[in-house]
Amino acid sequence: MARYTGPVCKLCRREGKKLYLKGDRCTSGKCAIDRRSTAPGQHGATRKKTGEYGLQLREKQATRRYYGVLEKQFKNYYEEAARKEGMTGENLLVLLERRLDNTVYRMGMAESHKEARQLVLHAHFTLNGKKVNIPSLLVKPGDVIAVKESSRSGAKFKAIAESLETKTAPKWLDVDKSALSAKVTAFPAREDIDFDFNEQLIVELYSK
Image (tube, rainbow, N blue to C red; front, side):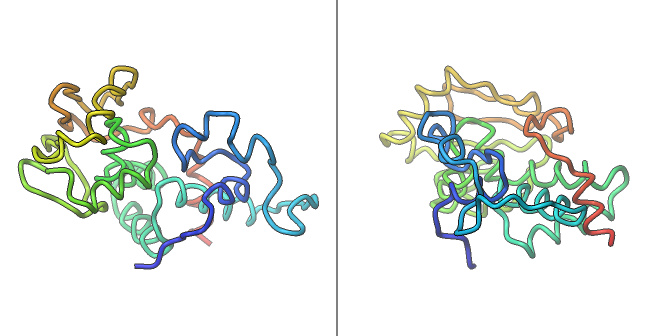
């Protein structure tokens, strides 16, 4: 499956906001958008008036890039959200939050969505006791995500275990820091998502 392999800091600069694609670097003085907030490219510094469509497109792109999903995947999530009861925009964000790679990230097991996806792809986690390597799986209440037994002794997860003491998980996850596991206690709610999304702009874009 094709994925963007270029400098991810350019994506933040293009969207004009931090998408936290590089973990701790995004909160340090090395963050590219803090040092150079203009869009990338020869004409990035040129002021451009953004119309209604442009605002909607940028919000969709920022959301898609934040969660690390492709265009077709994102549209499929939107169509599924539109079929559900309730507000389509909120349904969309909840579906994205329920992805296994995002859940691993929310558990504090990775510094970014990209790292979480890689850890899942390399089969370092189990879902309800079974090895899993599909980042797009949607978790549900009652599911238990845990670091695979054979992976816990590695230097990577020893460092993760130490860092968990300073991290706070969302209330829909009951994290057992000593066992490197978490139980999904509820579906994510809109108020559990602390990133500044404007999902209504995405709904307006796809409703055209």
